Length: 262
Image: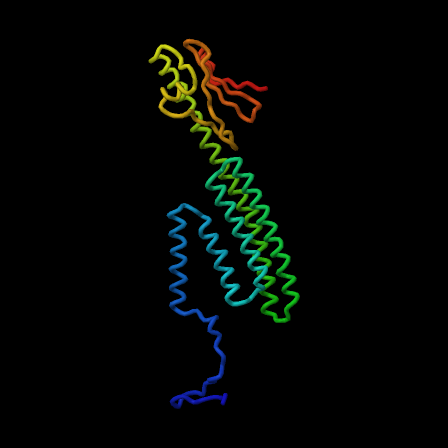
């Protein structure tokens, strides 16, 4: 029968006091948690990816909320999906900062934002259906975390995407200038070596030993083309957005690359 018992003449203890096993945090659990954090950070450093710990944090919070049942699980799943979509958008843009990727990133971000908005609205609705104080507070706290995650994306993630885009544009501006100058030097070297301009771009690329390069305008890659305009003269050309041409003519090398607007 339930009651109290005296053990070895010591103080009475209540042998029927329920123990919440799920809420206990053992030494083994602490070691597992610490090693898990270390593993996540090691992977993040190895991959150079700040998204890894972000994903781990989202999943950890979601698991603890699910495990201890402090919030409604349906909107919790929706919130996690939205957060992972936003983190995925950051990862995609970090891997590919092109204009085409930016359009996809915006679409994914919109879906993620709508998903998190649905979750944020659902949490207080679910809280109103409960009478247990713990579940009410848990749902409201989950709503605040969902909104905080979205705000972090809006003010942190978007600015990070902008910084990545600007850094990529600056890097390519320097790289493209060097590439174009190298192409001009190689074209004059081929002309001097063979005593004539290559007949077409195919022959030019064969003599060059590599395909024609591309240039970056902050959004897309644009190919550079070759054209023979005389026995001993040629033009190099690339076009951006079908609105302006950049032309180098061997007949006027001192002018360099000249921009022509339509």
